[in-house]
Image (cartoon, rainbow, N blue to C red; front, side, top):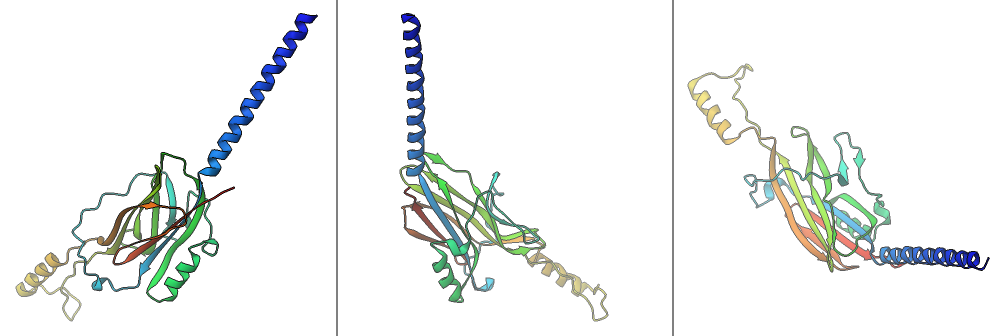
Length: 241
């Protein structure tokens, strides 16, 4: 009987130890998650400026195809519907909301995306690119005028990589037409048309500007990345629970 009693006490002790270890592990994991939890906010703006006023000439720049990613930050389809892989907050819930409103009310910008979310970014976190597709719909190209991705990593500090392209529809080759509505087939007009088509080839897309920048972030600092036509406001706040 004494042996059975000892064995029962040992089993109870082992069970209690396992429970305590499990509780300690859960508490440590919860504390780690709390220490690494952030509020992330992004606002993407377009400058109200005529494309012809942009001094940069980037139409000839080679642009790599969009990255292959499973996650989307903010995408507006051709029918106007929006999609995101994240649980996003609305513009009126953002710390950056007032700044976005002031910029838009200045008449110099329009806000294309203003959103935020909560996420844990532990040490050595390697983020997956988050797809962005916003702005006017370019019907001939079948895409939005601003597309690219945003990637968030963390080493000692958070690092945000912004990779956005601002496109415009390319020039379309035209043919000379007579007053009767028929193409003018005279040698002079044919030469003129050929020259015009050489100058204005049919190109669905031309690169207007882009943003390629990586910025180190500190909690509760506002960062502004910009190009001649687009800008990005970024804000992170560490959440203490």
